[in-house]
Length: 197
Length: 214
Image 1: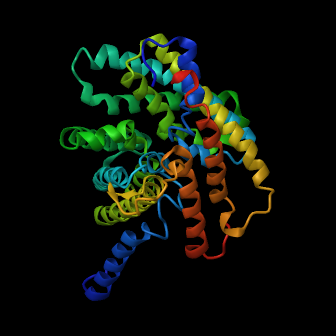
Image 2: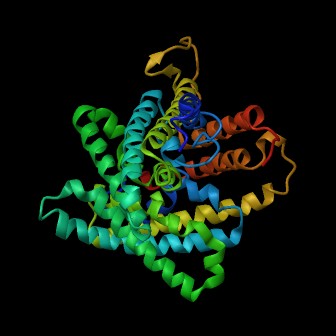
């Protein structure tokens, strides 16, 4: 598991590959299956998640350490984190709609859905649970974000191929996607034990 | 309103409508298998039947309570700020469940870990609040919540039972297979979760969805 005394690079690799958020920890699977139909949207979503995640973790870490802890309001953790994230997603949505309209159209419903993207909230919770400092929290979040990006883009690549393949009727669509994810997860499981993590 | 003129048919119709809200979540609109929501918790918390059932119960509480409260407040909530309001409602109930589980079932709470607070971003709860409870009455929303919860709890427990049985040779912690059984360790590891749900979906598609592939 991740702890305070690990080196930065180790934290990054551990978050990105060994504990890949999608395939090993099962967080944020809705978007993983929902938008991985096309490569382009997956890349867009991947970037969106990395961006939101970094911002959200920074803000929620500060909120936690400087508001919730001193005032003994720990029970407000869930509510305050989710509201912080919701605000940031609104901001990002406006930004992307203004600057990259095609990307905005491509992502459609999934951009507002980052609010309920568990990965962002989970990263914010996990850095608190692991008791990491701000710098290590950010490195960890970066690793989680890249892990998300890496997995969803690879998965989209594979799904573009399986969409063409002859598959028996009951397995078409989502069932085969789950089987594919299972095999990918098996591959990622091979990294377990790397660096003795 | 012709309620007084023909009281019985209306009441009966209302009853069948509420019944339908209840049953649709179980098979026809099953939140996990059809609407493809709430997957994170389903996959992560199904390594054993006990964990899965505990997750189902926690989810049930949050789902029903937040559906009812959202239905109550949706009339007085301005449209633009409805999402933050719903999220606040949901996160309140999630906090209650989180703290109650920490106090009464510390073991279960530890094994579910971060997934209890993550119910707040469980898309089923948010999705039903937005798509159903904000547009329907309290009774219908309550029924919808109960139905969706049963559907969710049923599937997550089923996955939990299958994974625990194949991966560990037990169900709810009790050994049911002969002593010589060699467990498939893979089923309690992450890939097994994807595998089981993939096959369940294929089965559901074969037997409950007319017309095959969507």
